[in-house]
Length: 62
Image (cartoon, rainbow, N blue to C red; front, side, top):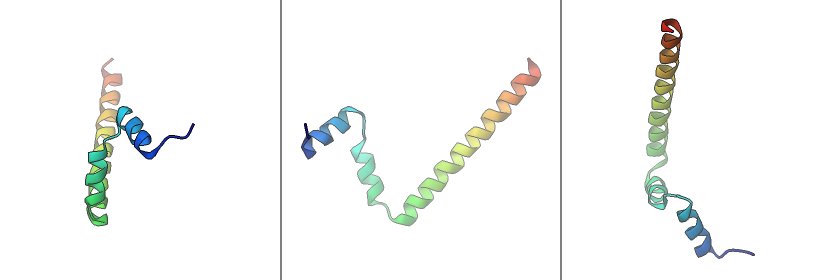
């Protein structure tokens, strides 16, 4: 059974897709999206570094 576009959107919303966030991101310029991506990547890498340091410290203390 094929779904209509409205049914697909409704199913996506039920699954938790945030269409307002998608629309906001599509309203940004490519440069703005690239800066947003770079900031998110930097945050993720910093969190990864902190996690690795925390695990290494926990191994030395244990």
